[in-house]
Image 1 (cartoon, one colour):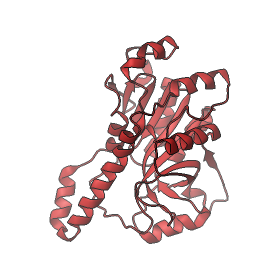
Image 2 (tube, rainbow, N blue to C red; image 1 turned 30 degrees about the vertical axis):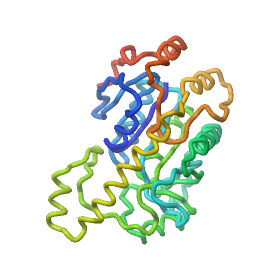
Image 3 (cartoon, rainbow, N blue to C red; image 1 turned 90 degrees about the vertical axis):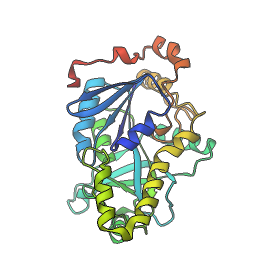
Image 4 (cartoon, one colour; image 1 turned 135 degrees about the horizontal axis):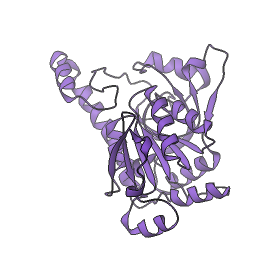
Length: 296
């Protein structure tokens, strides 16, 4: 089984595009979606991801942990819509603390993800991410984050997911699609709630009070939506085959290119019904058998 962590509802929905056999439940207040060979947790924004990932990994005991979703661009070389496979993730709090803790993506997963992304003709590169506690909304903030260690992207959850995975000795991979480039300021509408759900009325109220930003908000919203979902459509014929990777990981075998696809859980096709018999016959439980007493 793999565990997928995404902060926002729109990201989770993109992850669910390619499966229909879904069981929705809740774990310590976090929405969880169970499907064939995988569990997807909506962590909410920021440090909430620490509690969400620790609870999910303890409950479901997966073989692989993935942190996925959108991110802000920091490198001036990257553009919105491009995919970044993160080799390492830092946390901003370590910048002046003298405590240089990082989390690393599994080298085999990075290699496989890049190979698959290129095979699907996605715009992809490897890089690093910085996890922050406050949204980096302006170009100056992004520039400061980039200056520390040359990070390519900024987001708010991957460090916490990677740290939780590292504590359990699990292979980890962080994959992010860029929603806004380094020079682009974000409009702070207040529409995205801490739990990752979108408050449409809050957005409408903000635009009503600030009509001058309406076109920017519309453009940003369209791009964020397409960034979350377009790559999953591009990946429609590229099986993740994470069940095979999980089996190899349990045996201690090294991964090999082609097992993992490129795009964060947004491209995941593990739950296709045509593969159910082989998946479940290989020891990966069906959704109905995933129920755990620790869910609530």
